Image 1 (cartoon, one colour):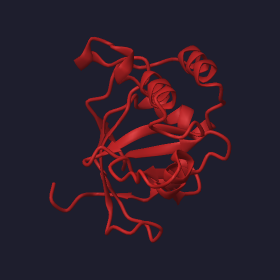
Image 2: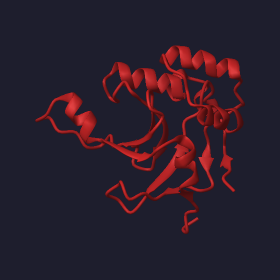
Image 3: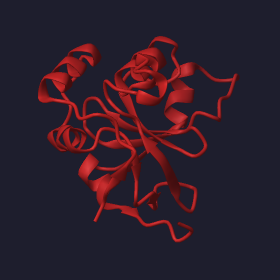
Length: 160
C-alpha cells in the first residue's frame, strides 16, 4: 500500500480552491483527494518505471506540499503553489505544467494543467542554441495518463 512520510499539515478543500485560483486551473479529482490525505511528503514506494523514459527508472525524492512548508517556516517559495508561480514567472517551467514532485536530481514530476497527464520535466538539460519553447518541449516527457495512473506505477525501492 502506498503511504507517505514527513507530510505537512493537512489542507482543506478551501485551501485547494484558493490554490486553484492562484494557478488559474482546476486540479483533477484524484490529485485533490491525494493532497487532502497526504500533503507532500516522501512516498514509501519511490521508484517509477515507464517505457516512455530513457532511464531505467525515476526515483522520487518528495512530493511538494501545498500551503505549508514547516522546515522553511511556511515560506511560500517552498510550497507547491509558490514554487509553481515562481517557476512560471522566471520561465523555468512551461506554464502548462504544475510541478508537484522532485526526483533526486532536482527534476520535476508535473501535472499538465489542461489534460491532467503526468510529465517528467528534466531541468538539468538546456540548450542555448534553441528557443525556450523548444527546450520546454524537448525536456518534457509524458509518463502517465493521469495522477492515479502515475501513483499506481510507483514501486518499492529494493535499496530501501
